[in-house]
Image (cartoon, rainbow, N blue to C red; front, side):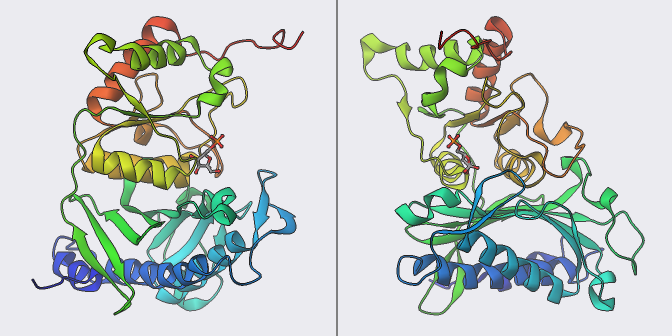
Length: 346
Ligand code: P6P
């Protein structure tokens, strides 16, 4: 059976983009090169001294693992050298990274990314991932990227994808014409088409949420979980709870098998925990292209949410469309506001 490499696939599909003329091709290719470099380090994380905190924390006060910083640098350098990317917004950087050199200033695209999501799982060998979105810049070519380039609606994404560093390393992405998955073949150092035209089942039996936060959840979430745990009990096991604590891993499993992932607002995270620009928007584009749904739990598409800041957090309900619809019905019926738990510990 002939193998289609990622590069061959991107070039084959280039004709889909009359205006792209190879720019998007170069950008995605540079993204995949950085992914291979990061993959090499992730795979030996236990062996060399790149584990543990570097004594610094990122803008969210989270300890920065060396691999976070390493991945951030690798993706930034690779995208900069592509000549197609004029700037980057990354979870690991408080402000946008606008390139000053002449070549990247000619770039027509910007990238938002979480270079290594789920990094708290690095030293326990749980799958982690890179998440990215690609937009066309709105500021004039030939200048540095500007803030307005990065707070565009999710519907303006020209491409979105993730790399999952798991039992195998995969790159899954969309350019608005379906979702395709490529598995890295280490023997030839190429991402090879392994999951063409991915579609998520309209329903599933997997719900994925951190139930340790249950007491802090809105009543609508509590009632939806009760429904999942009690539905059809007489006829056998209702739903299955699966929570890895690494967005890319939980998302990828649901994409292939069906299911719903929820990170709602809660007493701990009144706006939700996940970031709109480089976690929820890219995953929302992917899931919609695969026939699924992504909303804020209150009837608004994630990609229709107005971005206000680089690290803005939003509630995230994503997965099989019938399951997201059911969860939204519970939120509507029982309420989506976070509870007041101030008297719980008294
Ligand atoms: P919690 C990882 O830190 C992350 O950003 C996502 O990858 C993951 O889905 C979520 O946070 C897990 O959060 O609060 O359940 O540990």
